[in-house]
Length: 76
Image (cartoon, rainbow, N blue to C red; front, side, top):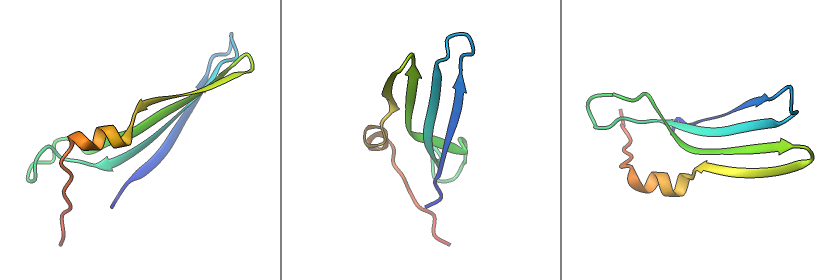
């Protein structure tokens, strides 16, 4: 399977807040023959820290999101 993991880190200079956005993607198509969306984000969560407080927020949960998609594998 050809999946990708990544992260994006950004912050606010004035308040000192920092956020790291983690994500996982995979190739995806709406149907078997026409590739309409090159990648699908199937898991995403954010880690936020501000004034000594830290919390994690799940934005897209993999187990919930993948239940709604029909994944297929192309064999050559």
